[in-house]
Structure formats: structure tokens, C-alpha cells
Amino acid sequence: MELIWVGAGAGALVLVGLFALRRRRSAEARQSKQAHEAAQKRDPPVDIGETYEFGITEFTDHHSGDRVAVGKVEGFVLFVEDVPSSLTPGDVVRAKVLSFNRGHTSADARFVATL
Image 1 (cartoon, rainbow, N blue to C red):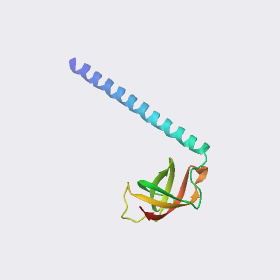
Image 2 (tube, helix red, strand yellow):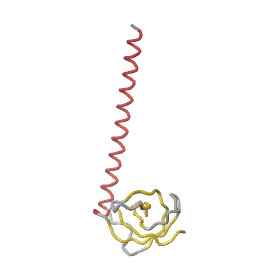
Image 3 (tube, one colour):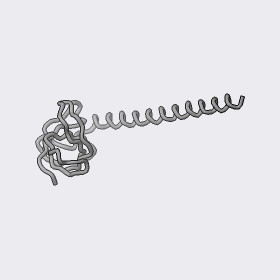
Image 4 (cartoon, rainbow, N blue to C red):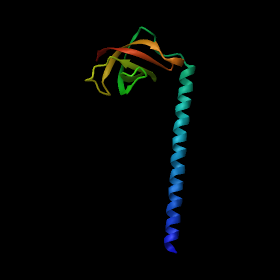
């Protein structure tokens, strides 16, 4: 009889944990959506043809299929192509903005130099 109560209690704890995890993910998704909507309403803090200095936050596969560096200028995301393979997240680079992506919430840029 006690084993049944232990199993029921463990099952209840699992359900509570899953519910809490789902709420947390839901809150993170909501924050991400709000940030994206806010970015769509503001003017980009960068201009096409200009160069900017910023730190690489990560590397990712871009929609072009190439590996690109990701960085931010005033919270605005730049996808930087032609970055030397020796660079790692945290390195500071200079890149020239080539074009805005749909919705002007990010831009493509080309690597110019390492700082």
C-alpha cells in the first residue's frame, strides 16, 4: 500500500515539474516574440555601406548555407560572411553592412578586419 503512495507522489512531482518547465519555456518564447516585434518597429541602428565594430557572439549556418559569424550592434543582429576560420566567439571584428533582411530586423555584412 505504501508503495502505491510513493509512486503517486513521484508521479505528481513529475507532472508539477513538467508544468513548471512548460511555463518557463512559454515565458521565454513570449519574451523572444516581444523583442522581435519591437525590433520590427524601430529603425535599424546601422546603415548599408557603413562599417561597424562588434564582438562575435556565435557562429551559425546562414540561409545561404555558409557558416557565418553573428554579432550585434546596439542589439541589432548582423550575420557576417567571409570570416576567417581562426576566429572564435568573443573576437572583435569590423564588418561592412551589405543588406537588410526581411523586416529590417537583421542585416548581412562582410568581414573587413579583426581588431
